[in-house]
Amino acid sequence: MKHFAVTLFLALAFAANASAQYTQKLQENKQGEGTVTISQSKEIDDLVNGKTKTPAPAPTTAAKPPQDNKPRQDKKTEEKPKQQADDLRDQQAQAEKEKEDSAKAAQARAEKLRREAAEREKEAAANEPQGKKVMKGAKTVTGYRVQVYSGGNTREDRIKAEQIGNKMKAAFPDQPIYTHFYSPRWICRMGNFKTYDEAMKICKKVRAMGYKSASVVKGKINVR
Image 1: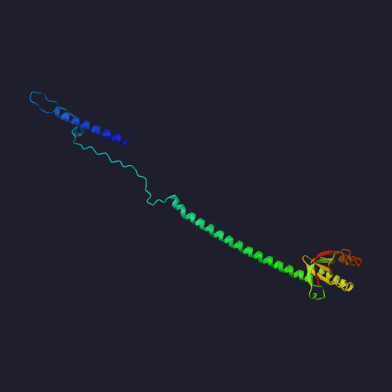
Image 2: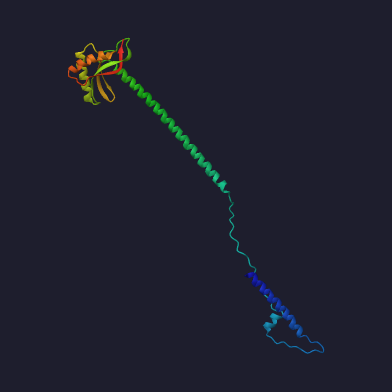
């Protein structure tokens, strides 16, 4: 639109200049010819004869968008440090997890060894007769015993197991008596029998004494 206005203005100025030259030529006095007089206002005369300067059109400048002087960084370049930081955090988390798993595994092994040691101590206590020393030269083999009593884990159960043990010791002085806590209960057993029949013979006598729940159990026994 601005270009069209400038073009139109230049065309009008050119036409005015040509008209001024034409009117001036008509008013010249030539010998043998008539005289032409043109009457017009001073403003028109000045405009036609080019005495009034035509104001130059104001230069047009297109508005430029504001420039961002900040240096542009490639998106991949920006993401690379972030990815490296994420990878480093993942590696640290993995190292911490492996360290924690290793500590848990070591703790589990230690707990297992502790339980095994406790079981061995418990088994050794079970094989030691009440009120007697372990036989010298004895060895541990698989055999049978008579279980006279099996209770709970309370203090009353312990007292009852010891009382029954004392009664069995008085009734069968030649048999070793074993009163101990075998998790989760207190028990009282007697004898070291190599065969089931030997243990069953004593078990029947115990039942006849009123201990109807007496039974023969298989386990480790001490023999010479």
